[in-house]
Image (cartoon, rainbow, N blue to C red; front, side, top):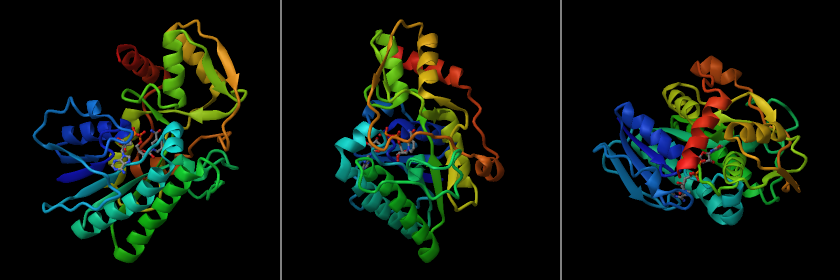
Length: 307
Ligand SMILES: NC(=O)c1ccc[n+]([C@@H]2O[C@H](COP(=O)([O-])OP(=O)(O)OC[C@H]3O[C@@H](n4cnc5c(N)ncnc54)[C@H](O)[C@@H]3O)[C@@H](O)[C@H]2O)c1
């Protein structure tokens, strides 16, 4: 089978390309390297792998039959989407529109990488897929949250009106090797500060909660979802919730660092709680995370120590 992975040179996309190649798929990775890195795919030597440098907000056509389109292209970390607000909105809107058009023309199955940010700063915890969210459309983070909400809406419209076979994954915080050290997300931030013995920056008082899914679990969830027949959104993430302070202490312990914690103002509209309800993923995909946080952190710390 031939599959397209947009955003395939990014953190999650490159791991997805790896998994698909081990499963025997022909993989076409499309990425404009806006926030990705060619080094994430340089190790791939397979003849079944093609990289195309292309911005998916512009149309692209293929002569050969495509079976699946995984649409992951989008800036994903707050630092990136605050720096690239228009590109973020464009890739969520025009990029998703173009990739749905491609899936329609090719009669391919389409999977959207959506996000827990679709729930905004949630008033319900844990968040089930039935929750419609609490998003500030005009705040700085709105560019990402609303782009993804629009992407979900156009995905459902293509399903309902053009019969495109679609899937929507609502991805919660995922971490692992190939995250960028400076991408501003809490896992690489804390690990790199701890490894360098620098102060660890905690936003707010650290009582806000997060839950962290290891990348191999997440990628397995995406692969199961595209092979399922389930069209409604599915949360994919780890339901083990902890507050940011506890997480910082865990990173200090595993790295053996003597870093101190310093506290900074909470960014605007930062979610206070974040935890997926994964009942649906368990039921329809038979999926739940397998990698314990301490194990996943060890592998991620090893990656950052070597890079
Ligand atoms: N990592 C997470 O915890 C997380 C959580 C929720 C959702 N997601 C979603 O998963 C996807 C991948 O996230 P990631 O963490 O790997 O981020 P990433 O920034 O590492 O990867 C995104 C990739 O998309 C590419 N890209 C961006 N705009 C593009 C465009 N216009 N045309 C072609 N390529 C483009 C980037 O160059 C990059 O390689 C994103 O859609 C993100 O919203 C990720």
